Image 1 (cartoon, rainbow, N blue to C red):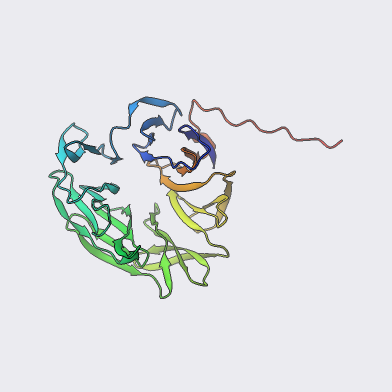
Image 2: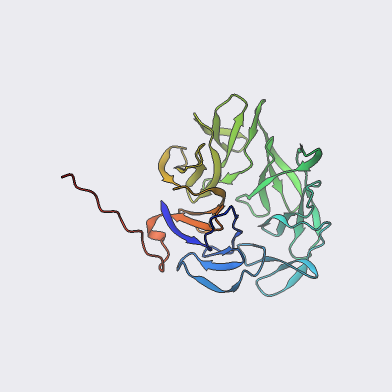
Length: 306
């Protein structure tokens, strides 16, 4: 894998880009749309704040939040707060945090009626003297199902009935990292760490850990790209690309890039997107996926010894 393209106007100051995956071929950066296949900016603005694989979009206007369907139908959401945090379309549901103070669990909304089906309740932590709910979500392989982590547990949720169907508790003295990903074979991957203990990357099948790898230094699980797992090194200077056995297949030098977030591409190819602190989204992947309108980097001529 290598850096294929960058999207957005680069700045020197610490400015976080806003990156949204619109489709398998389009990324939204700071309100503008870019083609991942041509590398070119597309006309108009990004038409929503979150998108689903079936063509749904979360739109927010003067009338509040609503789901816009692929056929043009608009379904207002009956949200209970003013937040629009962490939205994710999963099957017939839209999951989001509508409480800007995160005092309630993630809301599960029916995209056909806009009704609140219920909330995903998770363990709470104290943040600046108040209790907050924090959970990271990824869609499961079954429709209307998702996995979520809140650092102390991994939970499988049936989103149609809003009930927890499985739970994996972190081992005593350890916590899960604030990200979880699904591998093509159905395995669930996340990071696990504890005070005085090495960071581990763990793959679960069902409720049991089936593979794990310890790292001498802390690493952060970032995302899954097709059959590859992306983690960030402890010094933040490189990304490690692992296969499903958790063996390192290659190391990507970030070249001074300050990585904020990793966005999983919706394609089934080995590619992913990095949001940085220089107002850009960076597209990494195999060389064959380089956008048609982006030139390959020039190779430096080797210096011959006199």
